[in-house]
Length: 200
Ligand SMILES: [Zn+2]
Image (cartoon, rainbow, N blue to C red):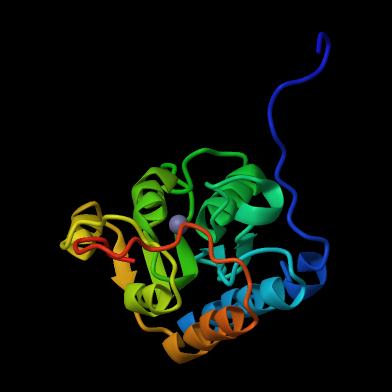
């Protein structure tokens, strides 16, 4: 073992290069969500992870700065949710751990499905000033994914930290991707326990 590096690397699947365009702007929330839903759908079609996509956008230029897809199963990493991957890629691209760094342009995290407990926790640490969400928690839960324990007032909680929450953007499209994944009999990891009080 001596001399071997310890750690891990995170490389998005090769097809992502052809699925996104860093040089154009995506002015509306629907434009941004279409990118994210495309990432989620392709991730299922290419068999490179779960049915979830996310991306960080610069809210001044409306350009993509960090795409993300769910990579939990292929990367053997339970934290490789699409939102965490997108935030990590954006930080690496911009060279900062704080996407809301003073003097920096505001950014939005756009996610195909409502964030789970972990991604909800990571959202304020990322420094984004807006989160845009497609499918709801109950849509993910309906196909068997666990969303973890989230406070009932999570929206107010984010907004009290200056993060605007926008929901139900192209919700139906994101939900169809979840259903397609379930129907393809793909692996549902972190299956929701059959108990009360668990949100997904
Ligand atoms: Zn998550």
